Length: 281
Image 1 (cartoon, helix red, strand yellow):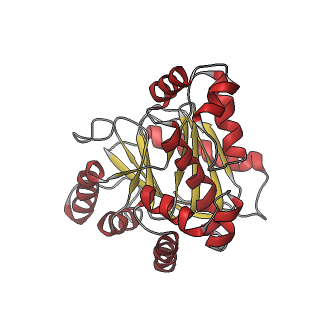
Image 2 (spheres, one colour; image 1 turned 180 degrees about the horizontal axis):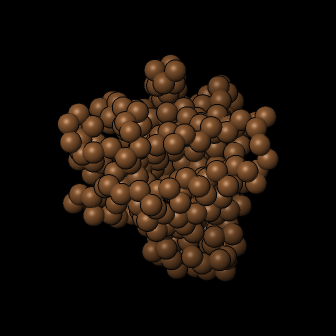
Image 3 (cartoon, helix red, strand yellow; image 1 turned 30 degrees about the vertical axis):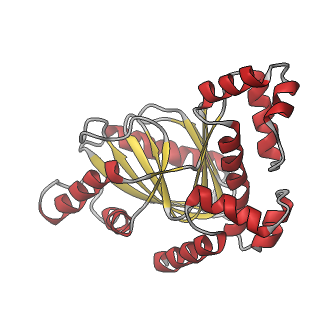
């Protein structure tokens, strides 16, 4: 089943019906693993939903933003998002998105991740996902189809987690500051500033933020800046413009942050994304 959505196609209500039909089909279908392709236009939003299977959401092209009550996660082209079964989530497309999703029953194999995360996708895993969506909708786990799907299943626990999640704290005052930062990110925000805005001591604020998000404010802020930068870089904006717009004093300072978070420079990341997009075509 392929969901193809065109800007010139049916009204939003029909697209919602199409998505609900797909979810209903997933719930009725048996087997431990199912792979499905989807094509979405820039700006399309899949409303909040959940399913009884865990989902490995992989964007071959475009950038995907996944929103949950626990925070936000960004999925660039060479990554995937692991969404455990039963978690309510909504999805927003940043750019035209060619998506490939693998749906897995929670007991399909030992070692499946138990929490939301963004993972890097290896060349092997990408090839397996691309191949899996060409198999029959309800393949038998035997022969070639079974080998492809079983190897794909065994590779999921080995995918390395990447810092592209942005958990929000449960404290409403601090969460409001986080939302404001996402709307207008800056590398110059400090712990003292945020603590003063919510009427907390620096120590109390630091302890609360770490406990509720699992991250220090410094790490959270850097991940939020990546959220702001990746869609613009993917859209072809110059690294210099993105760095300066986000408040960095220089491109090297922005590049240092980027390499610390993703392990490569912005330009190397862009080269890799373009290679993936050409391959997907």
